[in-house]
Length: 218
Image 1 (tube, helix red, strand yellow):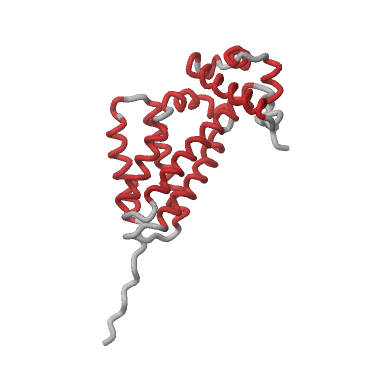
Image 2 (tube, one colour):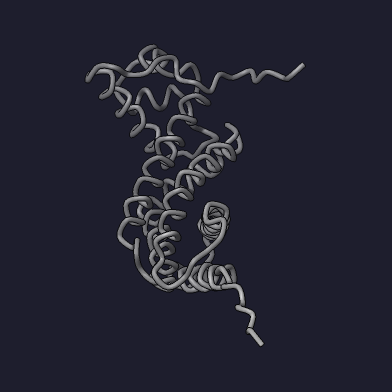
């Protein structure tokens, strides 16, 4: 029999009124503030409710426990991240291979760096709530946008753009998350940008579709 988690990671209810939506938004913001202030180990629903200025009972109307709350916070963060990257992807459709590779890397780094402290604060929480699945789902969404960009490339064509796009997104996400988590000066933002550009551009050049040779008629 499958082992059931002792925690429910689903919200109790979805906000359907403006007041409820405002309350949930306040809880999300308070969650981020608590994470940044004390870290995930000391992250509690009581602290979040106090920071949000609501009762713990009000918080529990939407989230049954801290795991459900942090899962929703991570989903919201990933949704915002992927939306930002997807929006930037539209800017380099129909461009050259070099421009696409550079544009994508710049978009990913810019989106991640805009909330770098939040990303670091959420890193520990990911392992507690099955974060790998959440991250993969976000990667799949971004890969769809990247695949469309690859199909629009004006000076190169590819086979299996969907697979290429997913591998690019996963690779860049892994490299970027490692650099952020390590907080090392060996991988500062500009060094990271240069290495990621080379990685993506080299991979795409290698994976370009080769035109079949035309046999010469004797």
